[in-house]
Amino acid sequence: MGAQMSGLVRQVRAQPKADQLDHALEILRAFLDPLPEFYDRLADRGLHMSASDARILNLLDRRRGAFVDPEALLAAAMGARPVETWPDVGTIPTRISALRGILRRARLPVQIVSWRGVGYRLEAPCGFSFQDRAR
Image (cartoon, rainbow, N blue to C red; front, top):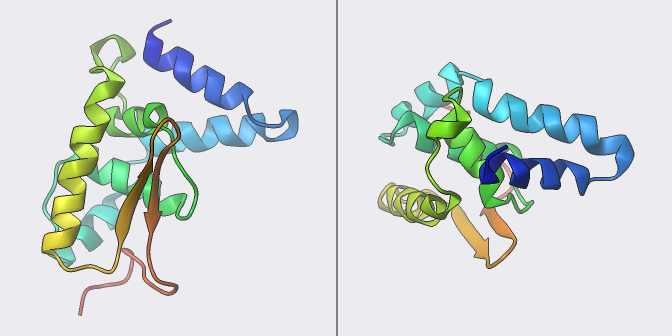
């Protein structure tokens, strides 16, 4: 098992026993979900990014207010690619930096916050949704 997968396994096992299956399914949904509506809403807002970065943003948005660890973000970014082809989890800070730039240039009221050793969290005002059509 690769380092990326062992990180995900540790993350699932760190959850209370009763929540482990739900947590594992959430991770699985994050990288298998094709997200066509989410992609459409990003495009409606003029946000242009790779599909893998859109999957990262979607996971952060779905877990808004909670920190998401880099291993889960990498799994989301890689989608259905074979694990052995995944880059090192160390690529996540670069992807987050690019996403921050995209969001800042679009002047959206959202922010990606980092906590060293923990992960990343999306913060947005109550009522903001990427799913709403841009006006």
